[in-house]
Picture 1 (cartoon, rainbow, N blue to C red):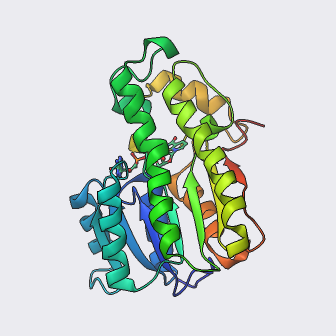
Picture 2 (picture 1 turned 90 degrees about the vertical axis):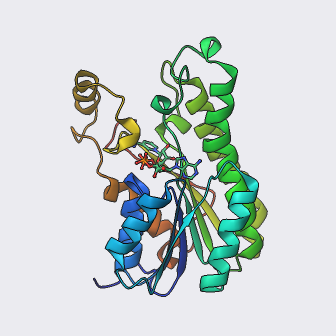
Length: 254
Ligand code: NAI
């Protein structure tokens, strides 16, 4: 594939890279000539994707990480730097949906404390831990993209811990963009709408049709439609963009 995305030769990290939006980003980046670290808590899936994308493994590294665990994140970065020597861009995409933790999808005060903490640990603290490790290695010209959601810009019922975490990602992104702009490092967030991935597997058929009908484009997003926005934000094509939160939702929140 021609490098229409402008990431050829860059060293990119994608967390949660083994599935859905992350996997689509890994495929686009690798096909565009980037060196990619596909990091995921599911090592087997990460290895499988790596083999599929680059069977000789020349420009890909698969790595197991739990983004909510500082030591695990530090080990991931060490492996990446040992293999590729630097980091030019990171897509902090790993996340869990409301279906992943029991009681998370209830009214705010009915969510159990361990569910609240898990959702925040993975979806918000995980982004911060990754940024902390990435920013120690990154140099001027590097870029970070954090996965927020339309739930990071407005709320929906029965989703307080997810909404709180994703709003937090937008705030963290803006604050860090201000802190690291002077160092030449850009930091942005993407806010996808409903996208066809395993993360929303718990959303029933009827609710899906209802949600799709509420989108001006009349359908859910496909993972590569979200991933393209993330890769653009990691490329030099977006060199004047930082501290922004981009909605990619088929017009749902228009
Ligand atoms: P997905 O479930 O297909 O992929 C998420 C990946 O993250 C999986 O491979 C999973 O193993 C990994 N992961 C989960 N916990 C992890 C951890 N602690 N450490 C490392 N990896 C971990 O989900 P999808 O839809 O591709 O989601 C990607 C991001 O996009 C998430 O942050 C999600 O919140 C966000 N998003 C998704 C939307 C959707 O409708 N699918 C809408 C808005 C935002």
